[in-house]
Image 1: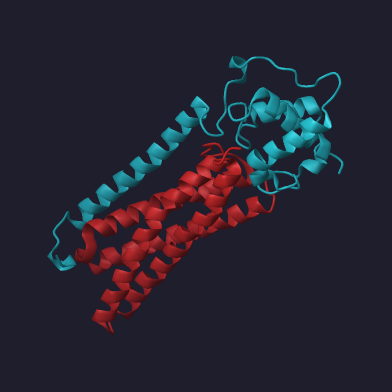
Image 2: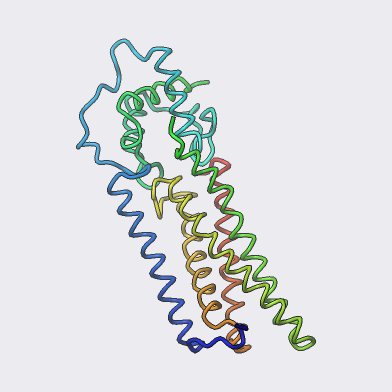
Length: 141
Length: 146
């Protein structure tokens, strides 16, 4: 069938359909995104209060093994925004971070609204602690 | 080891996001050229318009991959603040206009009048500018803007 032989809505009606379809797609995108964030699917935030409490700063401090494991988690979960060695990318340079280990751990768990997603749903409590230990080890380097 | 990490989606976003940008720019150029040369050659104008239509359609289709991968990188954050907020402020209107134009062109195909096509090209130009601004903000994000 040649394009000329096609029949369809008038230009005005087509414009209305296109506008409604476009707004619907945008609405669905925002709606699904809000649902995913709320459900903690993907890298979306998870209510931290519903998760078991965990130690954020062991008395004996993180071991070299923890830091090495944290480096692996960092490469998988964080480097896309913070750069391969935490030197910055989408997100700030972590070498210049003024935050302490407890604060780093909290941010990895809860995220920063509007800037960084929470990772409590993506990383186990141990992995969060290891990642925080690695990030903490970057400071000042 | 997880495969679908934010880094994976960032790589997918980086790879897919250039297609809708390039295809929208190309479609706008084709359609604008079709409008400008119509008085001299109706046949060439029709060919250019056809090229613009299919280029636009491809751009609209692949934009879904770019949008989905982008949302997965930032944990489904549709607004945000700083450079990410600016990136989103440009990308959503651009995405909406791109989809709307593609659907309109798909519905009217070759039955569109010249004034309607001229309006369509004007909207394409607006969408292109927004898309380029969004791409620029994406670059700012990559350079460490927050």
